[in-house]
Length: 583
Figure (tube, rainbow, N blue to C red):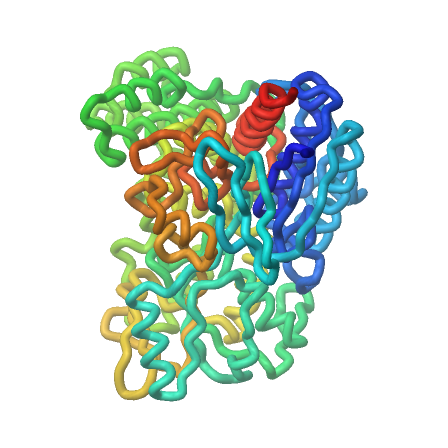
């Protein structure tokens, strides 16, 4: 019988796997036969998130030049490097543009078709547009993948779980809010993928509480304004009258930082990693009693990002420093992370506090900020967003771009530690993966038009009196009432709470999971671990539901293409398995 590989999921990760199988098969597997089965109700290539049937108003959150599904000479992967066009080259658009998600979906579909066509003769791909419900079979024998609406399972010698982003059952708070909403005839929209959410219950002119100020909020903002017929004339928003009034707040009370609006203009890039590299990760992993993130990891992150920041500041803007780089670098290296000595060194060498890196202050921008009215908060936050836009588009602050490169380097190193909890991922996204500048300019226009109202930091939601009530720390004592509440954030599915039936069944059977509920896999090749820590010989997993999640499904051009390394390692392990099993 023809050997079979089943990949659950047909989005970018599955597409990347097929591209890497096509690249490595000639050297690792020869011309033997192999059937690859993709199981996903959504189309191969784009999958659910990037499917072409979604609003044309929704954009990608990366510059088109940074999005690629191919490897090049900047990528450190085992096996052949096969360059191909990045999104902007394929689509013929400006590399600085933020392409629509539909266009990304078309690109992914093209990459999928190109990768399938590149497979050696004898390797065939079959798409099953259904959900996978269960995965059964002992470790030493072929596996069975049961599909929705099909009586007989797919038999698989190997299975790769690449479902991508998943839905989640509601947690205790969300269940309480849902029950309350039903009792009082209110609208409650829990965490969801905004493109999939039915927003029709949010009526024009009515107040809506929105908890969350990240990228899910940006999508919500777009769909409820331009998506309802509003338009922009320069810096002015002209309402259609069908928009609700969005009262938005969050823990920080501010939107994610704008994407940086300029490119590296020459000069040496920070030589990273410097203080958090493979040696430091090896040392953390070797500790017999484990490590604590706040005590052992964060200080190294802080020092690494500080090095990136000051390396660029001294190189590109020496007139804003008070000492020679060599002297500063020497003393910086000798200072313990987070120490008073380090603070003294920085304050003496960098006279302007605006040129110093304060990661804690960045995480709490409204700490200590108080307004006596919501009107004052609107003006204050518009000034904050305007200043952020100006700074993130001004090369005079190119140390910010160096910190961005440092964040990418740190993220690539921390993947080896597995699941380090949700805080770091949120912090990374807040600093490095915020909205395009034009979206924040739209937010300012919506604020001036009164369509968006800011609630400030420390937002809480209460129930009582037949309404939802929101409060924040930035305007003490004030509150806003509404009959609708939207949780503008993505679901955070654990193995116990995911709505994916296959993963729920594996959880019940006893696969290993992290303290935060992610599927534990072998970092070398993604094999699924059982509760004893033993990797399964026939099951692999890639993606955000695992503790080897990368920052994205597609490789980025540049020095830290984490996803391509993971994908390549899994593809090569799969081919090695089939080569060894071949007669």
